Image 1 (cartoon, one colour):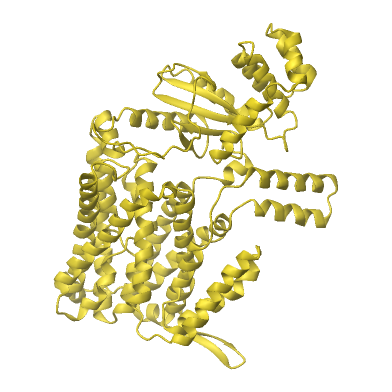
Image 2: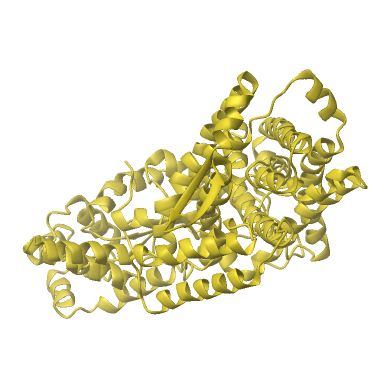
Length: 627
């Protein structure tokens, strides 16, 4: 059971979805790296011949000529950095960084976890010809690191991956700034001014409400060309465009409007109404969401592996390997990634925690933090891109082999960290992975037993809140799962109304019936009947249900006729809006929104995780954050 309505699926957690895609594509990237190494060592001449083949685009005598490797590195990889910018913006708009106070730790950790590796690289290469390539040792490869984290750290909670991604956001942004500022040799001011004007034009189109992607395409292509002509690495265009794309969850009003357009098409299926319904549905999604869905799979499964194939081909003969073992560039890259990254991430996080007395601290425990540090020693995409800009000849190969060796060592260290963690007792393992930092609350307002409908013990360590609709078939599918969860003696369950009246015309009346029953002390009895009999929600059916439950029928009917409880339901709907909920069923577990399926295995796992976190008491004297 996938367990999501159409629009609930559309609001899938941005970071989790990003992590899943990156993780799954890591295998493709590794295969591409291996293929490049095999190809280069079997026939390096053909490998180089393919990737140095010139491809030119000419229009009326004017054109652009680059070799295939440059088209991949500076052209196609622009889309990769577009996705990086999109994810950074999503994290600021929808993720934990929506509380700007929480940006302090990933900002400081991200910057210093790049600065220390750079310092180590400069220390090793000081005075040598390779010193200019210091940028090679600073940036983690998000796709490869997350993919290997899934393989090497089975059972590692999403919280660790999310912490990593918040740091990687800063890592990627700083790396692109370094490429634009440091590794740009000759700057032509006129094309750069044109690029700024084109970027302003993109803002103008958005301000005018233009939503069609084809309208933006010529400006984006022209921006890329202008940056290239200006001497700035044009992949920066992708990052800049991604950062300007806002992310938001679909508003309930927009969904209701889209539903109305679809109903018109259902009644009169013409091409015009089909187009109108399609546009209405698309407009419910944020520009950020639409662009990510369009480009993220392509960049992860095709473009980044293609980049690996074009750049990872290194001839590994005995002479080269013996030289690389002692080459300052190779040693500087390995030392930066293997030592600099973990030490910076762990050390800076610890110092911030101490200096702020716990106000700024990582959202993971020591094992999650250490594992994040070791897996951050895996660089590839940005490292190879900078290496191609900074080096050529033997030094380029030395930098690349250093990146690959560091990745292998980082993967091994990560495996060791999580193997040791897995051997700990359950309570110690939970603390080591999760820590005891306060989490942002997604649920607004918090559960109040004086007004909410609560099932289960008041002192339960886990509270599950469901926003539901009595006519929603997905809520009906979820109900057996909820009832199985309620066999847990340490769990309480809360129902909040969210009648989707645009698609379920009887949902509002059913919700009022449940409240009318609540006024007579029978909310849960009516709740269970309504979900068991979703095909019987007309007024006469509701009266029959009241009679079956032994309620005062006259009072029950009077409440329904006068809409006595409509305000109570409106309060729940308002709380759904405040909590960013627009579809049903939507679950919250200990005030944190649950994303994904709601089968019994998934929800049970999330409940166990919430219980483990609830058992981790914050340290004394620490002031809790307010989300």
